[in-house]
Length: 342
Image 1 (cartoon, rainbow, N blue to C red):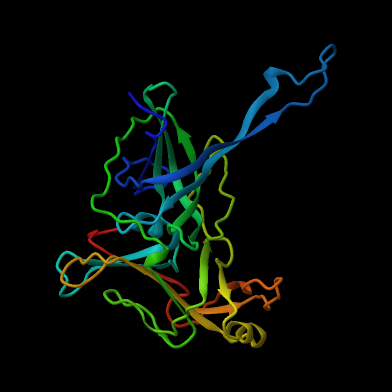
Image 2 (image 1 turned 30 degrees about the horizontal axis):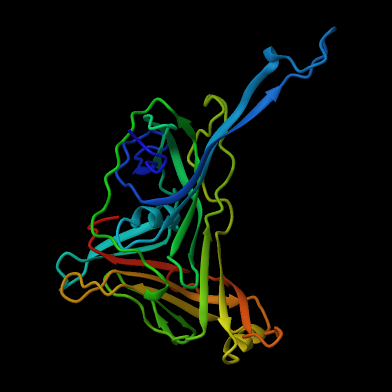
């Protein structure tokens, strides 16, 4: 017997685009909106005595699938999403820390982005069997990491899939053990200063600690193309999506107006760095701790000036754009965990 809470999401990395594999990664997730996206065509020819579009002249012209998956960020099992989002990943044992690995994710500079089989399992009402829906050829279009004040860190990923199938056997989920959620209390942020980017085994160093930031979000958009629907593929995309133009790195911070640093950086268009780190108190290995680090070496602020708010605490909602400083990566996401691989 099942309940409406017995929903699942599983992912498996494909070797060949669109050729399904059995999912091996099963995140605990908040919700999903993975759907079928058909384009229907309808003949418009006139026929004596018929005033309504005819059933025999309706057909499927093109089809795709995909949608969003929303998860809470934990200390284990996150690598599959960040590799899908950015395309490039390394996993390295941390010296002197038995059983601890550092995973570094950066935007890929060569095609193609990885493709995945995603299967969702939805139970039917009244304790019925779980119904699997399998999305082959799933490529991550974009994603957003958000760390709201007093909340759990969240990750939203958006996917483009080649097709959805309902005749694939359900892969029962198995979940990572001993994981811990990352929350606002684990976070610290640095804005400005000189930052040394992370290596394969060490976190970043440097930067200026900021004590007035209350919210943070950053998004990455791969800007994949919407073509590849060619003859011979029954209306489905026949090839893996490719990047179509410059990727986009955007974000937003909310800051209390305790000094003029961000105001002046905005007015003078001074380029800054941002480092956001979440680290729990659990010790793994010898002295390491589960960590998520987001490093953006070069950002340009896009507003706003402080405004009086009826005597309330003045806050600034500041958009920013991440830029390529031509030295290293425009963004690094680093995970330190006991996961041996992505």
